[in-house]
Length: 226
Image (cartoon, rainbow, N blue to C red; front, top):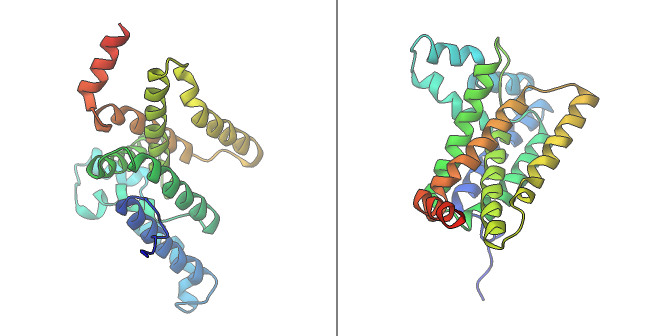
């Protein structure tokens, strides 16, 4: 009898990203508790944010000064693997697995990889273009919100095919934005929401091309509606 994988049908790419994010968080969390790395390990998370996070200062160097060095450009992707702590890491990883499994069952693996990359990068670009100063962006959530955008698009298609109200496809993102607003009112607004919204919009928009059928399928459906 064949033993089933603990990750089930989760795409290998999502599993790999999850493992990397979990390992990085485990090292940083253990270091913060002084369980590995000695006294210097307490500052590992701050150092990781400085070395791998992305900020408006980095964007300024790239976009306005034309410095496309690898050390700067890679930050628009590597920031996703540094989390703010154990709790956001757990939430981010759980959502990445759940949504990655759903979207990955429908998207081609290459399309899924492009989607995650686009949402991660565009989340960082939006964040850095709107804010200024040394504030850093980290975390999986722009990519996760990109998957929510893809999920919303797929649900939008399904509801349209069933002749139901397509607007209900946006219920999930509506609930999440309401939760975000309530959290901001209670504990203060976090600028990360800009990257999350950009990730969602990028995920939804790029799914028009990346979902099975691509642009031609989208045009066909629009013609059928007309």
